[in-house]
Image (tube, rainbow, N blue to C red):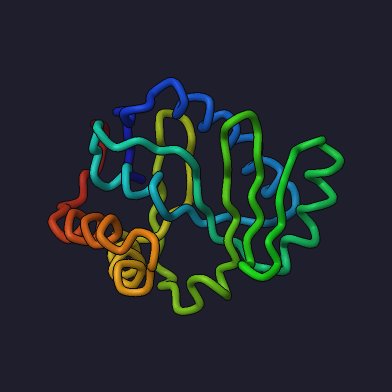
Length: 167
């Protein structure tokens, strides 16, 4: 378990986002779905970069879980957008967003090595540091929108030595 006691640049938004994330993780757990966190939340967890903002949370889930999850979102009156062509489900609340991406479509060769993060009470299963490095390296080559941003994240992650315990 990697404990993260620091906050990103947008601390107040991050605190609300954590609460929203807990709500969605509880719904997933009740359906037997275990999301795997990746993206900016996990980048922040590995880097502890307090100048970095976390605007949303990205998870990977099996695509077949969308069919179970969408009715539950409706029942709980949660707004969502399903992008079938992009294999993504975005769950929205106020200005917050949680992305549930198809693991089979976006990360079909994802390593089975995971770690757990505790962001001051928000516990998530996450991709390993090595997997996140590979994700950002690939994104830096394939992205038409933000290749430099992804390359910078990849380079930053390559210099990381894992922080275990409280910080």
